[in-house]
Image (cartoon, rainbow, N blue to C red; front, side, top):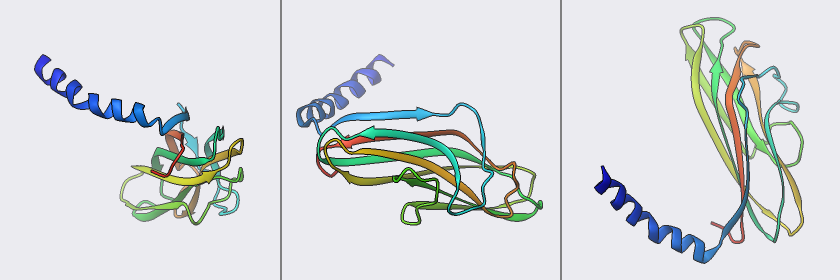
Length: 163
C-alpha cells in the first residue's frame, strides 16, 4: 500500500508543479445542496432552480461552470417514458438555455428511477464582470411533481486563457 501511494504521489508531482507554474486557474466557487429539490416546473421559461453560484471575474478570461445531480424520475404512469430537461444559465434567469442544456429520458417500469446527470459550459468574461450561473431543471413529459434532484452541486472556475 505504501509503494502504491508513493508512486501515485510521484506521478502527480509534475502535474502540480506545471499547474502552479502556469497559474492558469486560480479562482473558483462551489456550492452543494444537501436536500432533495422537487422539480415542480414544467415551464421552459421558468424552470426550477436547483443551485446558483455568483462570481466576479478578476481579469479578462474564461469561466467554466459545471453542475451535476442525481435525478429521481417519478412517472405519472408506471411503465412510461419520463422526460426532464436541465441547463446551466448565465443570465440570472430561471429559463432553460437551449444552447447549454441536456435531456434525460428513461422508461420507468417501477415507481422511481434514479439517473445521474451532469453539464458544463464555458463563457468569456471581462475583468470585474459579475456572472450569475444557475443550475435549473424542468419536467417535460410524464414526470410526476415528485420528480426531484438530489445533491445538486455547481462549481465555477476562472481561467486566464481558454483551456
